Length: 100
Image (tube, rainbow, N blue to C red; front, top):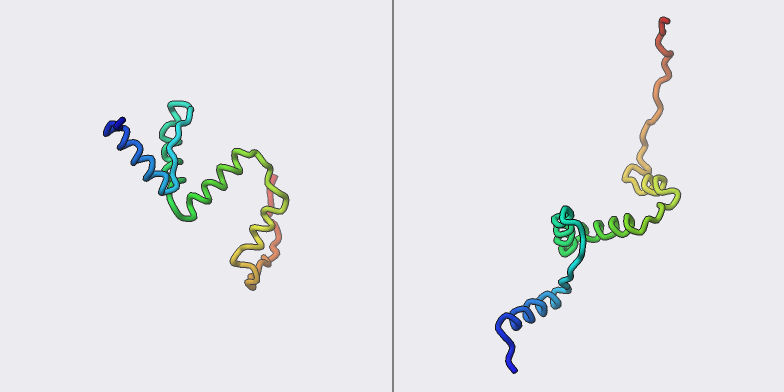
């Protein structure tokens, strides 16, 4: 039994997708979100640090986990200004006179 050209083309297309590590799937959602989901899928299919960052952000948002304490402190510790000799002292001035 031979396959039709259309079935052969579909098989070859899915095989090429599989070789690239991609899969085709269907999702259900609101019609208004169609372009959003498509653009997200396009961005996630790319290579580089951007898709990894997007995945991490989406996972964190969907999981609903609260961030751990000390997040701001850890970010400040990773700052490139750590160890820089910054003069953060401000001159002390008297306040202005307020008339009531």
